[in-house]
Length: 273
Image (cartoon, rainbow, N blue to C red; front, side, top):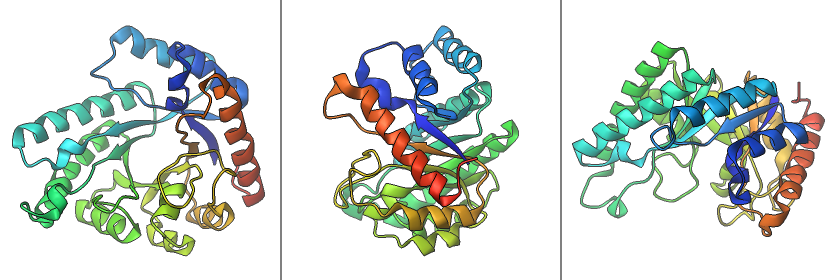
């Protein structure tokens, strides 16, 4: 597998987008994931991102999209969210990437007022429509498992059920190692995602709250998860997801540390191409 970085790691640096792309290549990453909203940038920014990644031979693997409106009870919000996610999928195609990393959000009102199965069914219906659109572009959607109590998809059981309910080959799972730890998912459970997973995120955490730390700064026991991921035979990338560094002035050291530690873990697991 390739080792990538989600470019949002550089967002606190206060520098132009190309600077973060250049630093990603300079540190040694094989690929990059882009977190950007196509409705918030113009064609010049889109072209700048693609041209710079091409110039550096740094393939874009995935784009990130949070679209909680896909399970909103207002049909107008759902329609807007569908069009917004389609715009993300268009950008995945334009960037010649492999997949769109999708977050669909949480049950509202403590699973009261609106029956939770109604939100679930709404999410399934809209994700199936998006999967059909993704297939027409020759790309995939990777659904992220979120480690929060009211998230629709917060463990392997709900991930498998949601993917099966959508029932489309262009709709698959993203495996996020720190989220698995926070959700108390045993590594061996990942084999239930055989043939259903297409992308991987990696970071560390304190075992209690969402953290996205460089590996080694938390409590995640990475080797068992990486061995299970290896057995899945995913033909793709493991992308590091980082939250803000304690000292923004040292962001380069923060990202470099994450790269060094992850590269070591992948090498020991026999995962790095």
